[in-house]
Image (cartoon, rainbow, N blue to C red; front, side):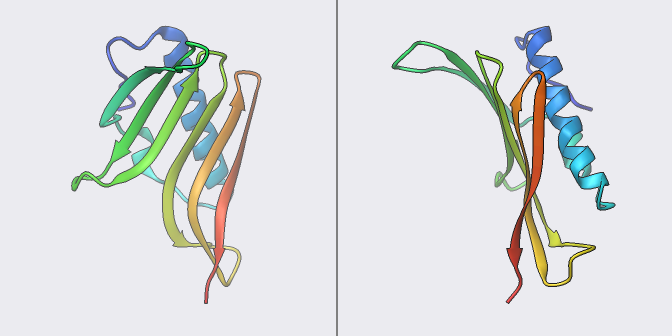
Length: 120
């Protein structure tokens, strides 16, 4: 449950935990639970920006077929962006489909939103 790569720092692990919690809270507000948000990442990779040399940690969730179901990025500056597929009708807004939940911000101010698509 919620394992991260062995070389992930304690600070990165805390940021990952906060991002996961923000996604779960956004979904809990409309009575949706996605256990996959707490699952282990299928892959993680640190990449250096070729322009300024800053490092970003990229983490991905994939389903059993290898399809991408979510991603999380933690920039060296502390900025965070995460999204996870929801793929279900909105339980409170008829005519709307929830594509994904997104979280962004920094350590002190994480924000979240549901990415909605109108149903045909």
